Length: 116
Image (cartoon, rainbow, N blue to C red; front, side, top):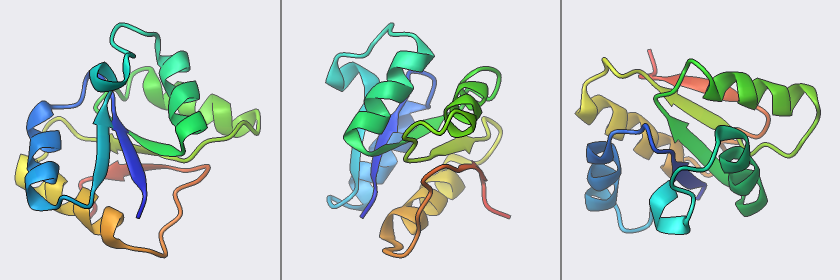
């Protein structure tokens, strides 16, 4: 099962919903691992070192940093960019589907949800 890191911008209702849905989903928030206030590049570096897929609402800068990691062939477990306008329940369902899928590999990829 993949592991996740929720950045500062991700709605905490999503994290709480995922944790309520399944005790098996391994999701950490940046403030829980001592990364509050740390710049995006360092957050991505930490996530890569821990093998965690980053969850973010920040499509303005975080995605660009993710693509930079891919372009520079740096370790990148993946990123899920979450639309801020998406219904919270739908987002939780989509992330849970990804978490439950043993065959999914987001390494070197940025995907956007909600999944159409």
